[in-house]
Length: 160
Image (tube, rainbow, N blue to C red; front, side):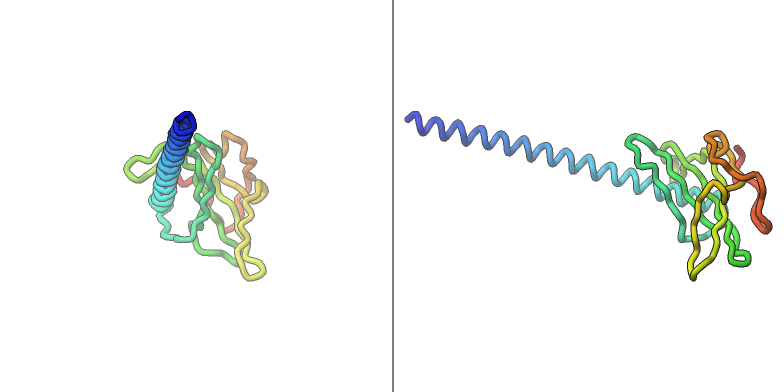
């Protein structure tokens, strides 16, 4: 009789433990899926905002995400004019905040130069290649060079 009670008590404890583990896994799965959907919405809004601001229809964009938890700061870089003697100039816009009407707010941006070597574009987003900082990029010290390379766009894409 005592052995039967122990088995029933042990089975009940195991069942409760397994249900709790299953509940934790279900909550974690739902949380992860909603987080991924929000990130996908942000990326889509960033790309749509970049296209609307630059007027470019470029499809191969460089998207940089800030992977720190709780942040919504991302940047999108892409060419804004045709290449010029093995050189291409890219505009990077820094977006932050929530998605509203499939767009996001531009916090700042800068330009940088990409060079065509060895059969591919080298995307060296280095401080020495950056210029024309505006908004948060200028305020946060992105170390933008003040000189504008020949043939490059020389004005901010949006008002700071």
